[in-house]
Amino acid sequence: SGCLRRSESIAPQQALGMTNSVTAQVQSRILARRLAKQIDLDGSLTSEYLFVTASFEHVLSRLPSDAERKRCLRFLKEHARLLKAPKSLKEFPAGPKVSVPAAADPDQRARENLVHALFNHNDFITVR
Image (cartoon, rainbow, N blue to C red):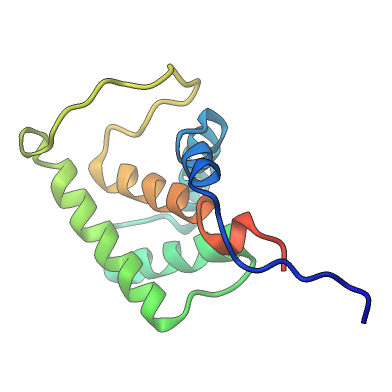
């Protein structure tokens, strides 16, 4: 047919643009907070499972695969653990001031970062 097909690729500048985007940071925090409130998270594996599922549905308009879900649950657990011990992390200069600051709670901040990562997912960036 006469339809052009774009091959999958993301230029490094595009990926860095989304990662460093104030809009993406703010919107990921807003969405993560809204989803956490809707799910009424209690820190259990079931509530985190629901959060991952809802995040994929809202950002990528699909369910996560079993492998994606496992990686996301592992990310949430490990990332929250690191955020609970800030002295073990390397500090770097802050970027531009944003209207919605990162959550103080390490578990919620990990959720915000997961949603931010999904905003950088190839399925979100490219149109198929």
